[in-house]
Length: 275
Image (cartoon, rainbow, N blue to C red; front, top):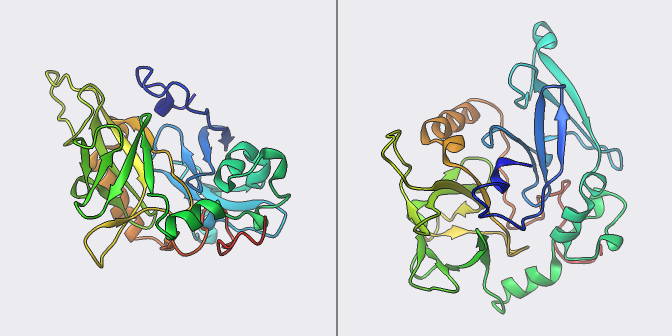
């Protein structure tokens, strides 16, 4: 089971996500809700479905570096021995339960191919009309996005908040993370390496994007999504900044999952007509 689902029993009850081994030495988590493959021992190493080649009805294909399992966008003939071509089945076959959750339908009603996947249209309409507030499920608690006070507010205890300015946004991935003390149930700065630091700190990743227009954030309209939680050491700020710099020096497509359903490419506008 992925480490994020075994943190002192805090995440008991979360569904175990499918795993797959690539190149005989790299284990990846198939995370349909976040539209990605995520390296099990390094959550900063993610490969989005949208970055893969995807002939209709034939699954996906992409290239990785044999040395570290990272996505390779391009390579020269001289580097061909260092790369590995990976072929991947469609998400409806890799994780039908995950697809059903994203769509808001029963598993028996999911489509035959990823091309027909549409994010939860009823929930999308409810959010956009303001009938239902957008929430993030974090360690079993629901947080509402309070844009007036620039924070996530705990639904059960409104005094507890997660300020937006504590979020570290991931370039190109429309994700953000923050650090959370499981014992005190509060946001903290990343702990130091001191052995005297007894805090039970984890890294919490959510699907979110910085809103440059009003200083707030945007979270997907398509679901009341569940955060992903990892040991804090797996997403240190040093490694995080290194990864963002690496991405900025390589070809990565910036996408906007708030206008079209980006989780299962190719894109389909969320009208519900394809259900």
